[in-house]
Structure formats: structure tokens, C-alpha cells
Length: 224
Image (tube, rainbow, N blue to C red):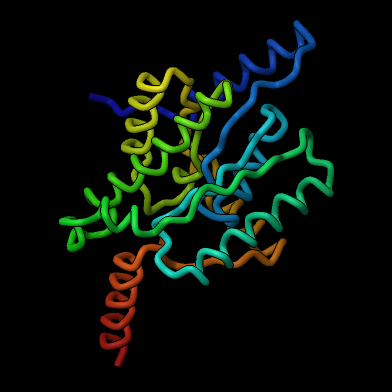
């Protein structure tokens, strides 16, 4: 079975949105966009802002250390403030979710030894997108989405599968995506450099950080 082309699906929705705005002269649809970090959101916002009125939802209880969390959320706010000051299409709003890492740890219990990209990550995606979908439905947004698919390390098919399931459960439309396509990830790296954004090489959870440290140690040993 062929995997759906999520980028083409997104392009069709954007084309539909543009046609509707042109013919009816109405406001753009409202998008509730979960963001994992400023670097990942940089390209996504650049790409989607001309077509949607976006509220960025920063909800990442998977980030283990509170100082790391604060650093990342402040970078997100700084980027949005800068984009808005530049007058990029429609103004971007931001909503910060509750930071309760104990809820992530409870969800991950029993999956601590799963490799990054496995079942623990899928459960984490579900946790963050479930909160996003619930608030999108509550706020009567037209769509909800996530920046997570921009990462080459994230399973875009699984993320979209979760998003589509939650869309049916909460009654709000899922915006399909594979933002890494069409040089999306490359563009996010360029924008991160341009705006001096803080980047990290792990998702934020203690398990990912430990796994990345172990890989780096192995690499250093091999180089000796």
C-alpha cells in the first residue's frame, strides 16, 4: 500500500483556501498549530502564514529540565515577536500550555528503554496532539496541526495517522503535513541561522538526551 503524499494533500488544502478567500473575500481559516520549538516552527510559519490565521500552541511537557523548557519557550516567543514586527501576512498569536513534565513521565512509564523513534515517541506525539486537538475544538478553530513533521528524525506518517484519528475524535479538521519536503528542513536551518535561534540535538526528554549522549560517546571512541 502506497503511503499518502501529505505534502500534496497540504498543497491542495492551501489551494482551496486561496480560492475561497479570493472568491468570497473572507478571512483566512484559523489554525491551531502545535510547535515543538522555534527552529522547527520557523519555516512552518513562513510557509503557512500567508494562508492561515495562526495561533502557535507551545505544549511540550516532554522537556525534562525546567531551564531547558524556559529557554526553548522564550526562543519561540522571540521568533513570533520578530515575525510579527516584520509584518508577515496575518499576525501570529501564541498560547503556552501547562508545563507538567510529571505527566510525560507517567505516560512514558514502561517505555523508558524504547529507542528514540519508537513506541514511547508515538505515545508522546499522541499526548501533545490530543491536547492540541481538544483546545482547537474548544476554540472553534478550522484546523489543527503540528510542526513535528519537519524533522527528518520524526515519523511523519505516524504523526499524520495520529492527527487524523484525533480529528475524528474531537471533530476538528487535521491539517496534513510533511514539512521537511521541498527543502523545508533545510530552510528551517537557514532561518535558524538568520535569526540566531537556539537549537538542540535532542527532542527534550531525558531519554532522548541520554541516547544522543551515548551515540556521541561511541562516535568519539571510534574516532580515537
